[in-house]
Length: 86
Image (cartoon, rainbow, N blue to C red; front, side):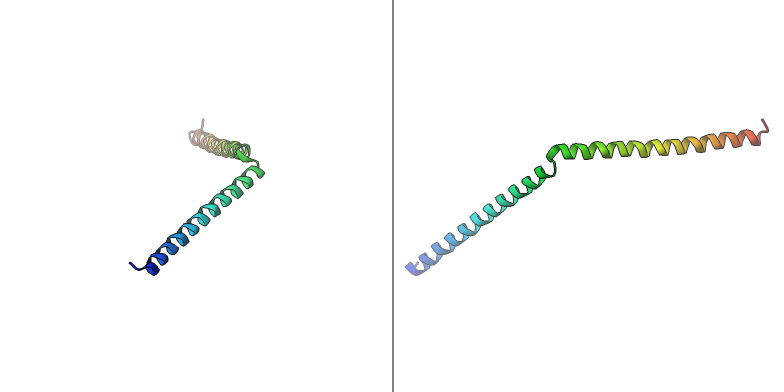
């Protein structure tokens, strides 16, 4: 291999390493930025509040469905008694 080819290969290896290090640094900075945003939005406690709110809403929806089903059953039972002339 000629010196020129060796120099070119060394330059390419250097260029690739610089690119890799820049990419790693960019990923680190992006990660830090996302972490800051996460903390500014309330961090884990925010997620816990959101989860608790979602759980309460789900329970309210289930209670409404149960009430609607109970009303339907009560109506069906009442209608069956009416049909029996009791």
